[in-house]
Length: 172
Image 1: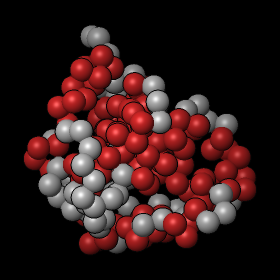
Image 2: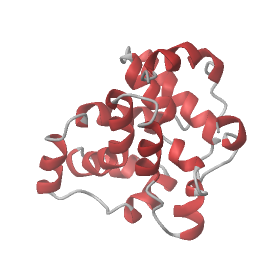
Image 3: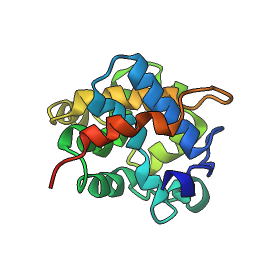
Image 4: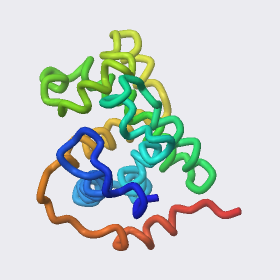
């Protein structure tokens, strides 16, 4: 999927592949657990399904890429990988509600999608979010997501994550 759709731009100044590699690199540099590095690498896999990567900017809809991506990943990875992916959009909505300046610092594409994804959380919604399992991991993932949008940033290639991803696969 990365090879087929990774070269696609999705409203940011980087390609899908550049973005997820940068996010994974940020997680690795932050000494995140391997499950969160894997989540950072895979968090936008739903963008590759049904042209979801173009839904917000070109079609004005929320394709719920976090849900389709998490459902796809759940066949292969444990909750420690899947749930931060499922919650990374909610984490954006949460951070917009609780962190001064976060909303203003969002990229143009993230701002467009935020409105389609339900907007900034209310105080009650923010409290509900923090009570959910994996919400703190999702917030960390969201920060890696935000940092992974830099042009001309040379980070390790996809192949360097193969053994990490293979170690995260569920048996069965």
